[in-house]
Image (cartoon, rainbow, N blue to C red; front, side, top):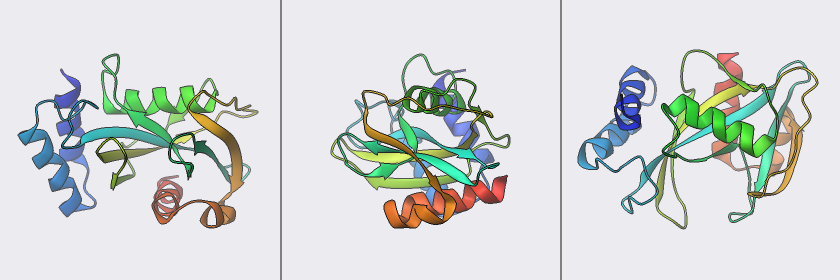
Length: 171
């Protein structure tokens, strides 16, 4: 199964945000290349909010290009067999934490936003950090930091706050 086909199945199975979900599905129908950064009309991306529920905190990255505190995530790559695999790869690469696992049940939110390269149709997952996880900053970040749940609204935009709420509800 192709990554495109997996994305269609994941989105068809996602029961929230019906109107936005249809935008994503319509995009994939109209754009066979809609999974890839090369699609200038927009593309599907995958992200994961790394959570440490034992300590009531999340790991955010200060994005190098956007200069905003965000969840880990980004463009799908040919090595990604599924959207979940893309989100997990991004979470592992950008957090530096081995052993991160996605919460079962699929994505917790969708978020469509414009970036310098194109519209991102982000499929957002929640990921659990293993006990004793130690983060390591990647080349894509200016900083990487744990924030208590109640601190997130002070440093990140509303989309990250909504993702945190959805991720906590999925716990």
